[in-house]
Length: 363
Image 1: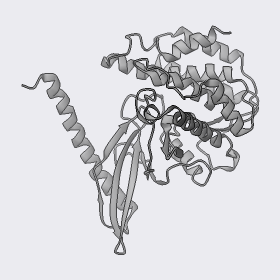
Image 2: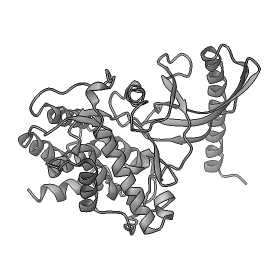
Image 3: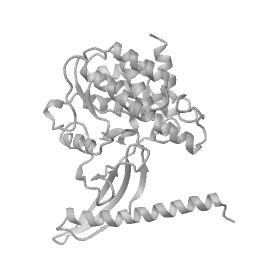
Image 4: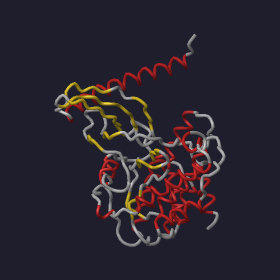
């Protein structure tokens, strides 16, 4: 006998399949307008979906003929999630804009095909890009996937490759790239002031009726300790191994550019370091042998870039705060859904709040 709970879950699955089938049909119709010369155009239904918190990503394959010559493409379509956004005004065009600017640089990104801003086709803006073969590390890096399955020396190499990918981004001559989607910061501490103000704005949006003292303490300290960064660079914004595609231990694609900005490149390195403890969520997985710690990570970055990392502590505070305010709606959804392994006060007791407590205690 099927229980009501199982029946409801099955109903949701059926509705989801019907929803994706409808999207597939509408996407195929749209693709025919982009490939008017194509004959006998066919696409598979969307499959292998990976629903992130900032994007929904689906894979499909496209077959057609042009002048009797058969063509076959393996493509990816991305759009914003219909609910549960981590940002008050997330914008899909930014990541398309940045990836397009990087197409002929040393930073590998998937080849873009089309951007569609009109929501009439799929109910939301979306873009299509080519699929890159390789492996994306699991979000629970300490518990499963590429890093977890590797031996210690391979883990160290994979980690170093990720640091090198971050360094490659920072070495780009950003002023020579076409980046109309990113604001050029002003002189002095403006580049930091913008990031602090953005954290404050997200905090006010995500938690309008509830004070989180450690976040307020961090904001006060950051505002009192700004400085003029030694240089400005294109910042990835979400620098982590889970946003890379590896093949044969090499990085073959850098993904997820929705948080990109022009700023102090040390911020990216701090984010990379700050995120490592989150790979233990939610069950406190132990550290993996071979994964470099903060000192080795910084030393490798300095060796690759030939530049000294300055003001890392400031950026660790800033990036831990940024992580915290972004996670507020995510934590709230987790608590409401009753997912096992997370404490009921997860919104105010998590790796970000704990990390800020530890950092600010050093002041």
